[in-house]
Each structure stands twice: as structure tokens, then as C-alpha cells.
Image (cartoon, rainbow, N blue to C red):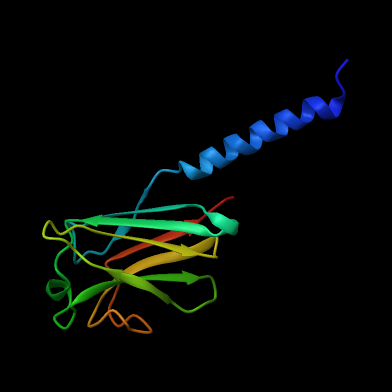
Length: 141
């Protein structure tokens, strides 16, 4: 007769693997679009990454050139802000000739807001314009 631990251990491993697959296969979520860019579409996908971090993947399409949204803007900047924290510039979102762009980044936060703003340059310390996209991420695992 098998011991209880020899039965429970494979079940626990199977549950962990299934949970990991569920986290790793989470679907992209539609970002909230500002009224000034009605044709734009954005998605964010947040998954469990290495060392318990959150891998964040952002993809946008049909987004107007930054200068069309804010006259002094040349680039879009992606921001991550944890609860009760300041915005953190995590990189520039550059558009291709089809007005599509993407950015992959990592954060240690599980709950945070992703926003994208038009900016004069990519090395800004805080947003200077209203966001064109926002989404609140709550990673459960």
C-alpha cells in the first residue's frame, strides 16, 4: 500500500504545474484608451516571471504619432506606478510605420498601474502629459 505522502506529492506537483501554466498563459488585457485617441488599441499582459517578479508585455496599434497628441511630444513613455508610489519610467514605446509599438519590461510589483504618455523626450522623470492608455494590474500569483 502506498503511503499518503507518495500520493500527495505527485498531486501537489501537478497542481503547481497547472497553476504555473495558468499564470504563464494569461490573456492580454485591453488597456483603457483616452478620449483623445479613439482609434488606438492597447493590450497589456502581466505574468509571473523569474524570482517572483512580474513580466509585463505591452502592445499598441493605431496610435497616433506623439506630436499629434501633444505638440511638443516626440515619443511615448511607459510608466509603472505601484500603490502609494511615484511613477517609474520603464522605457520608450516607439511606433513603427504602421503605428504599432511594443515594450517588454519587468517589475517587482504585483499590483500596479501601467500608463503611457506622450513626452518630449524618453528620459523624463515624471509624466508631463495625460496618459493615452492606462490599466491597473492585479497579478494574483
